[in-house]
Length: 220
Image 1 (cartoon, rainbow, N blue to C red):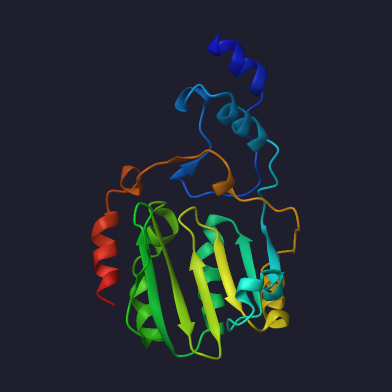
Image 2 (image 1 turned 60 degrees about the horizontal axis):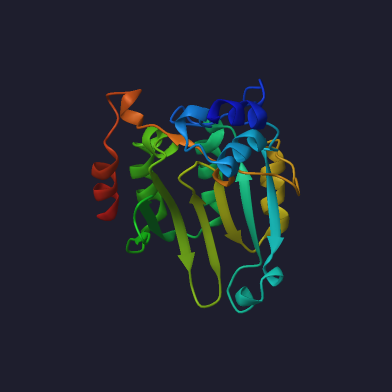
């Protein structure tokens, strides 16, 4: 019965997408998920999902709860994993010299917020762990500047797409255009679908363990 259900919902197609994921992240096979019709339908839906390079952008006023906060827009960005770090570094140019480091594990209830420090010093540390930060799908991180007047944040979700809060919308979109990224209203993201996470250490024994790296980042 379960085999017939899988065949009905998934057919003979294999999952196809155009975005380069980290090696630690992929869509599941039918036998890797519960035999649930909704889950299998989501896997089927992922085959045609619009998960490509690009971004969405929304003005702050779209959400009345944000009307008094110090940012003007919010954006979510899909970019090939091999280009993620370069874009992250570029977007940190929107931040002032003093920032705080955000980091957390996917199982944590909250994000750790460090003390404000020199942005160059924090980026110098993060650059040492580019492989882990772009490939370990059990952790997420970002940089934040928040004053009473202005909020700017660049954050890398655990599934390795970027979230950005800022004010200079024109310059921001020009920056993404320079990376060949377009505004796509119906863009989708992998965290909207069932997924399989694999430990980065299974692919590279030289990388730092997730918990060890997060403990190191918490000291910043």
